[in-house]
Image 1 (tube, rainbow, N blue to C red):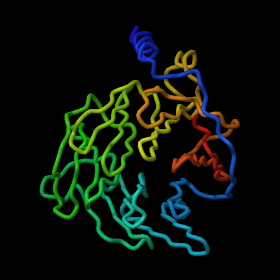
Image 2: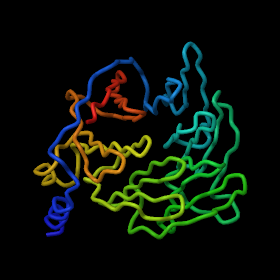
Image 3: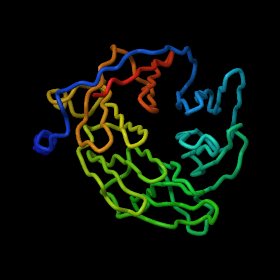
Length: 273
């Protein structure tokens, strides 16, 4: 009964359109990595291999490793001069510069008011967006002052995915997708399509609905193993028309969508009307 109600609300919300966004292949880049992270505005390539973070810039290669911190679970390259690395096993975030030299690190278990954190992204002005697992809420943490400077209303559950820019944060909690401003205003609250993956660029969102969803009836309403795009200012998700391929990771910048299939990065230019 709960599944039927969710599907009804999902359709009623009008969050999906039958229209499809075309994608034109522009490049294929071979890559052997455990995880593709992204490509910055300077065309530098970032990835993780053997729990080591790599940056390839032209003929130069840089790397950062902190094996004692456990698995590197999240990387935010929105500011290539101050890249955010989060190690969930040790509840620790590290900031590195554009040559991957360490600038600072914060262990959230050792600050004056400890907290367990599941997601960390860049907020600007020496701040992070963080998700506090203990209180189930987004917070803004100033890593210069080493304290939380703003917090948001509690959520109904734990964050499945979180992405941000300097002014806004997008989060998936349960079956809801939400957008918050830096000032704590809830700007959007929509069905998430059941996705656990989220990327954004300049307010444009890409989400992925895998084929191993726990709700088989969802396939009657949306296409599984499909990437969806929500343009800035819209409340509609558009399926992205790409060839069938395995989607391990993806990254959005400008109008280029990068998809890593485990062997190569496939770059697509989105044809948005």
